[in-house]
Image (cartoon, rainbow, N blue to C red; front, side, top):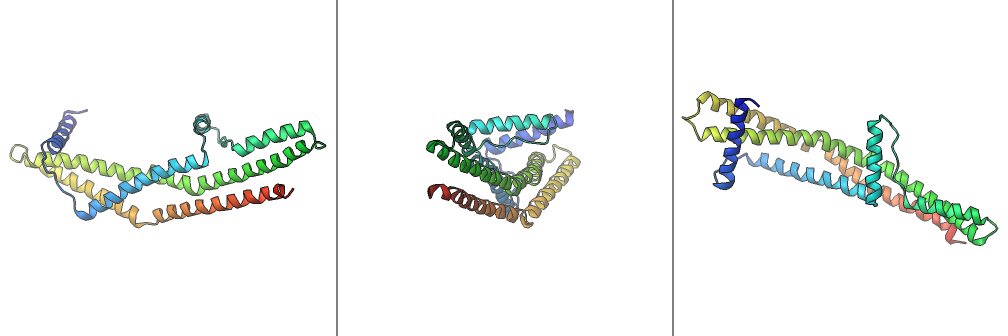
Length: 241
């Protein structure tokens, strides 16, 4: 880091210390800016939590979830496109039932029952796999893109703005000791960062990206209802025996 860079870091740290410890007051941003920043902060938190909770909902077993994540990460490193699916518990149970049902044979009532139920369990697993794929494509992937691109860019602008504000406030309070040109440059950089942050937050909050994510959440609920309905239909013929 250059000498100028080290000086700027010192200015920021010194100003931050003064504000946190000594109660010095820094430059206040206007109400509209603060309100947008508050909404962005909440959006960032809810997106992160929705991504985590939705994955936990679709893949409730943490051990399988960790193993699957590791396998798919290794596949991406190796350049493999195909990913491994989550092993649905219904499918695992169905495999066991079908295996032992075949060993007992259809002439055995117990064996025949195992085959019927096992087949239905496999169908249930297929329905849940379909739900996983739909939710990932229509809900998780758009949210992940939102977090990795739009929100990440806004957070970057806000962090840069805060750094430039601290540098500006440090120099402003030492007017007379610091050259006017340095103070003028600090003001310009602060205003530039404020404009970039303000514009990125405004565009994000005004466009329909959040509405689309809300619709994705509604689709998730509808898919769940459809999934439950399909599972009920799969089991109905067995319960009639």
